[in-house]
Length: 87
Image 1: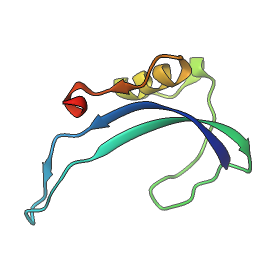
Image 2: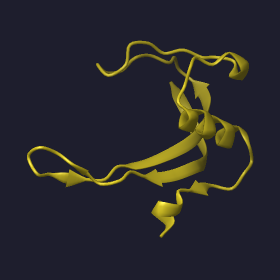
Image 3: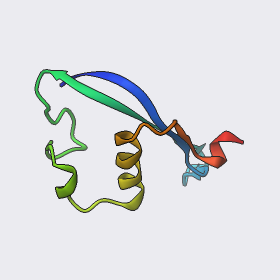
Image 4: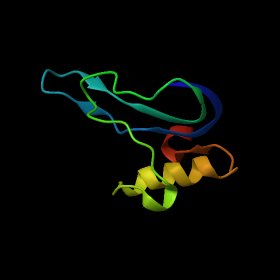
């Protein structure tokens, strides 16, 4: 799939995670609204099973924050920054 990035929708960081070996990491989540311009969507790794397009009123069951991302991406609201990220 070929796409054009249109804007940054949101930025959020996770709480620090400590792994059993003692490594500590923190994840940064950046959601970007993109527009498809060509190519074909496909599964590209072993972490995904399928690719699909859904009308907004017929989305599969999603976590509340995933729905928030979609709502933000569809709006023209300014980029949302997690208050913990902005501090």
